[in-house]
Image (cartoon, rainbow, N blue to C red):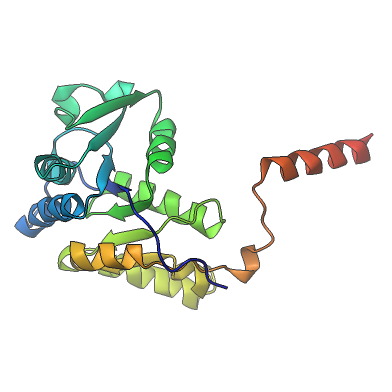
Length: 217
């Protein structure tokens, strides 16, 4: 079953490396992504600071006239660690609070090339989508084939029956910012039959809790 085929994106969350990476195309793509985001009248949510690819996308977005929100854990809110946050800075207490805040403010997610932090963030959102906590589109900007092996791993996980084909289709990838944002905006939510019975409603959870307590008594 599919959801809506028209996804309105007002705010986009971008994850990415705090370094520039080895190849010049990485930073060029981050800068270009920021320009495309702003030209499409989309605002940026990111992890704060001005270093690496995150600095590139945030500076480019800000200079092109879109709003930028940097979400920073208080422990990292030092310019000698992450540089100066571009646009508005929102400080939170923990890394988990940072991700939850970025999730709350975003309509879609993009991962630029990056390391462990980038992978952790995008896969956290990916797993939420698989569990139907999140129905927001998720994309990888596959600059110079950076994510080719990761995408091959996901295909292998499907082949070895650790990931369903429906879940595999949640994550989108493209080589350019224009292509990726187009795909995010036309994203169709796929309902995984094996997860269709999950209900995250607080009201329903409370009902189940009361029932379980009654049975225990």
